[in-house]
Length: 141
Image 1 (cartoon, rainbow, N blue to C red):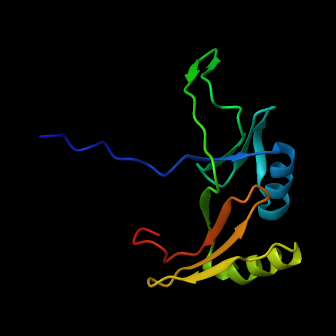
Image 2: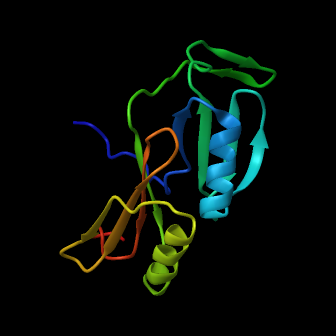
């Protein structure tokens, strides 16, 4: 019999892979108001709120092991149109819709979930799908 897994916290990081790191940084700073925690020639890490980080890697820069003074980061890569979602307050939904409109960012889809949540979907310059979601999307959100 397998022992129960220790409890997990929230997802700490998620990653996207982009073709132009400065362009991606400018888009996410301008559109979502994210601030960079760290940047170098292959990575930009954004503060997405308490305990949450969005990593932007330059496509092709993570295919080998990265060796740092504290250890190693194994190779990883993502291809195609990736997706992630950011939590937003229900009362901010209209303000987000207006912000996207003001920035000429097309809302590709809107979803009204059975639990009462609402999601807005739009694309970044690398064709990744960004979702802004209010509470009521999942049983735990």
